[in-house]
Amino acid sequence: MAEPPKGDEEDGGAAFVLQSKGEWWHAGFHLTTAIVGPTILTLPYAFRGLGWGLGFMCLTVMGIVTFYSYFLMSKVLDHCEKSGRRHIRFRELAADVLGSGWMFYFVIFIQTAINTGVGVGAILLAGECLQIMYSNISPHGPLKLYHFIAMVTVIMIVLSQLPSFHSLRHINLCSLLFALGYTILVVGACIHAGTSENAPPRVYSLEPKKSARAFSAFTSMSILAAIFGNGILPEIQATLAPPATGKMVKGLFMCYSVIFVTFYSAAVSGYWVFGNKSNSNILKSLLPDSGPPLAPTWVLGLAIIFVLLQLFAIGLVYSQVAYEIMEKKSADVRQGMFSKRNLIPRIILRTIYMIFCGVLAAMLPFFGDINGVVGAIGFIPLDFILPMLPYNMEYKPPKSSFTYWINVSIMVIFTGAGMMGAFSSIRKLVLDANQFKLFSSDVVD
Image (tube, helix red, strand yellow):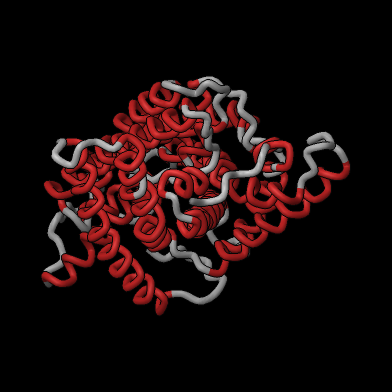
């Protein structure tokens, strides 16, 4: 069996970062920020590798499976809490239920990959948003993408000093409203573009070669997995004031209500207008490099501002696991959260982490490809495979039961999809490597 976690009296990550003070709606805000982000603007891009029929099917299946997965994980956490084994971290839950010390480190590795990937992606996309606004105001201005990434990184360094996950609850409520706001604006812009005289030609054909079509499909599935991915549900549930039993399910229903409204509308409207020419950021399709904007500039400008503001919240949410890992040992819980002893290491460590993410974002501007790789090697194992295994081991459903075989089937199917998605996403990343230089001013699709 894995070693039991140390008590909170020695654990700065638990005492400070993962404070358990929230209500169910706070968990709903955190979940929505973790899942419903500007990655939904990538949905038309994912559809271009799948087409209408398979795109709808994959989007729906991913939604159903992730909701089911998160529901099972929440039930396992509740079950452990009732038996006196409350877990506030994914890695501790996996190590305890699965009875394996190596699983503890496997989850740390995967979560680190996810957190870093999302942190890099959030900073990169925020920098791109600033670049889009700048290039429309000053088309021949001297500033490059990496300048805007540096600006975003500085803002993230300041915001990262908010000490606990719970302290983000109001920011994440605003994040939820921003997501609804820019989705409405983008859908309206796509409808306007599709019905205007300058509407682009609509071509929905897939890759002509079967091998290329298969690779594109698996890459798109990986992107969808990243879009639906979470990977930090136990940490979000840890922010709930105990007993947490049943509260997370309410938060899940809030989150998936927003998902239903935003995901389908963005995917359908964007792919309907741009087809297989959809960009990895639909806003760039609406603001082509050559020719006039395909929608009113004030609509697109407001959408970009909403996206930019939400990206700060997303970067903060996914950095919490990194912070609690750092502060598990660096903080002294015997002294106050804002004591000099704890404040100085917090500022230094969080600043270094954000600078690291910012430098990677400037060096490797692969937004669409990053989504695919992170989805395949990160979100698929944590969100589509692992939750089923702890449920089967903790609740022990009969091997002849429908639940048992549904869980096993999901694990097998998504293990295969994850392996193929990882191969195809990394393949695309390697192919796209020829299209850019370090610190390029263009984001590679």
